[in-house]
Length: 238
Image 1 (cartoon, rainbow, N blue to C red):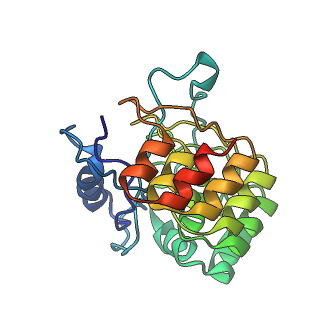
Image 2: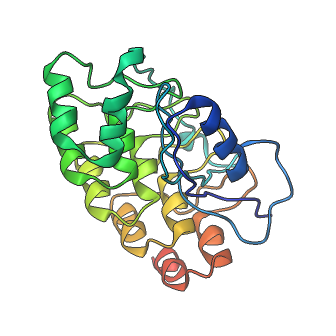
């Protein structure tokens, strides 16, 4: 039965505000899911930074998924210093020059804010492909996970940025990584949001369309309940 699915809610860079936004996307107390899932992943919260109007998301893999689909152990990113808020905001906004100066000045490219979200996750969320490519080029790890085991690929898949998704996949991102909250995958996020080009790209790169979230729903169910016919068709094609 479908419960609130992946939803692209505003991103807040203030930890306390971010918690409230997440609860609004089905990350708080679990309630009866509405018939229609809300799609995408939610962006990283940065240490004590001003709130940013950006989306958050939630798709999910299934508890009954095959053992091979079990999410790998999350890799922890080093925590960013309290003075780095502006750099995280710059990553979210796609300000490559600002981020580049900070890294050249000694900022760890894999540093993360309180919610475990990295510069790469923030840049990926808003589809800043050039910045994503730059960050990977200087050592950003594509499969780091935030506190709920979401990856940069999951964040990128909540939007229509197939180019950003491709950059991450080319760098070795795990196309079937599963989050630690609802067991959602990048494919579920993309399907729930109706991004058919992203869905097709993920499928072409080996995304498992049969994985199910904690409620037993697949990417196809999320797409169907949101009325994304083209996505449903792509998911049913074999």
